[in-house]
Image (cartoon, rainbow, N blue to C red):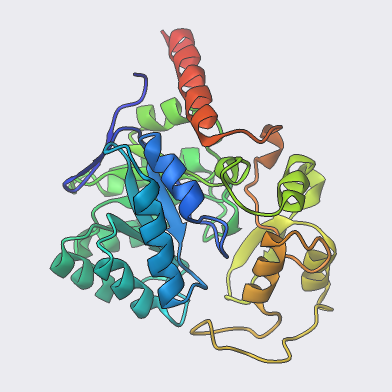
Length: 325
């Protein structure tokens, strides 16, 4: 065993690996349960789901999880209009933990404490990390500038972890490194820097169990540095995505504005419909989809089963530890 367990409050995952919550409908029951069955923390992306769809996904994942050493969580954007409904639904379904980002909520910590469910915010600054710790966060996910999708900083993960570790020295809560972590060697390095675990998203999108269209996966596998760009999301945050025709239109301001609005976001720039664009990506629409990706996607060259991902990460960790010693 080259990875220690990840302990969050009273919960214990055999492996210190959280699968990133990728929306819309990318991180679903099939992927989350596969990660949990390998001893990690599987995550269902709840943004954009109806109340019943979320219930169905949680129940489906639960039914497929056979390893007691794995955990199941949800990820929800604070920017989503249905944020409170999603949180309350997950609590009713007795989810193991709730992860949230793309904004910040103080009330969610009260809801989590009342229900006895750990709340884990995603932050990108030492200031917000300390605020979250004071409010009762059970763990902190530190997301760096290398991450995919919406990001809140340009700083690399190897700069952020020591910085936030120092700021949270008085709080006995785990720090999770997210963004730029692609291998078992990276995981070992993060643990040596003081992190208790890592969150990985793109690696798990490129898995057999992730049920997005093959076009999405192949687009990421064929991507190089020149194929990745920062766009301004209609959420009002910068985001990293594949530079396809749709992303180019966002950048040059020619993307068609929405014909209708379902008010899925608390605040929307109305430059384009992000739910529609992300759903198009999931379905493999190369022309109209917005394909989020991490900065280091070029380091991946295959689509494998989640079990193989864990085995490979452990072998890489073993090799890296041998070199360090």
